[in-house]
Image (cartoon, rainbow, N blue to C red):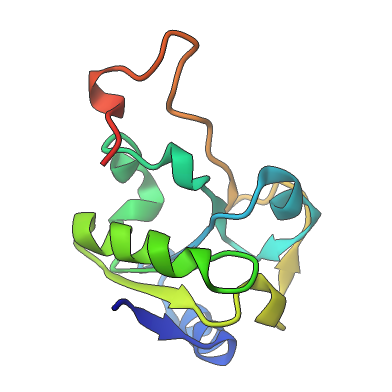
Length: 131
């Protein structure tokens, strides 16, 4: 089972962490992410996770916290990422619904933003193979 972190613990870690030491990955749908997300989070859909996405900047962090709506889906994604990342991976307990820290709106924040799909109309390429 993957570790969990509470919203309070995450806020403390965000306050203390260097910019590239901790990544928050929001796996909610893009419209929910755009309506509001944890400040600095990146939006990555579970179906977008592939070996190619592991080269993204967020995946190079020392610690990764996965957030979803209520904390259930993030557990599954965090377990998957824990197998493929050289990082401490955790799920946000209670998900975004439990978050009471700073919220960013839209997709234009400098640290976050939606991640483009890795698939093309022709299907996945060799570097886009799912885990």
